[in-house]
Length: 236
Image 1 (cartoon, rainbow, N blue to C red):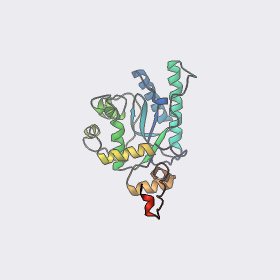
Image 2 (cartoon, rainbow, N blue to C red):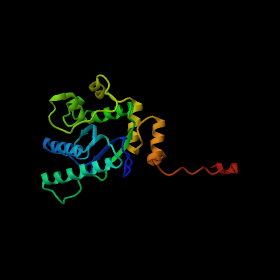
Image 3 (cartoon, one colour):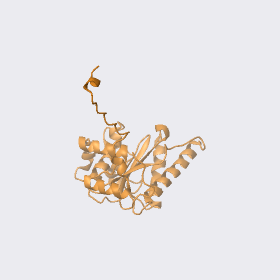
Image 4 (cartoon, one colour):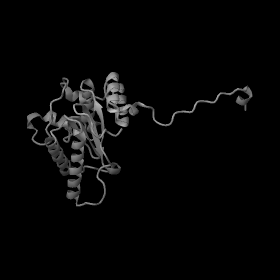
């Protein structure tokens, strides 16, 4: 996934994530998940961040965020990972032993319509697709578990209302696989940092944020074939 802009535009929604260094385990037992949830809740309150969906996994976390102002995304993510790193080392008594995260977080913008629902389905279903639970809502460390628990949910970060409503039978929708086109589009955004939305919205957003390179083919362009003037040069 492409690197986010240092001062990501406020008002846009972003899918953001970070992984453990070297893809090593980031979260182990329930205590470590609870520590991260508390840090995430503090970050949401401290930075006045709108958190729409999240999922914590053994080697990484994924968030759907709706920052209010320019630069809020970076400030939020930097405080979250720095504070979690400090508490991670303190709990394990491993200060100075190396990096916890692989580096700077990664993100891509998301259009606030049906494309947002697709991204939230993807994020809330991550534990299911990773084989950690038989059904997505059974994974305690994510927003779908919070949604399914209703008012009985006592811990974890506060979730903000979405700009579009969840569809009926939302839990069943999350448990169903994404369609082939949806999955392919998600994969492109994850790998390249491409804005996720309609073609027109993608083009406009990429131009405004300077993300046009996310849509260019990777690798060096192929050299044009040399024209052969003499047919004999084609023969062995």
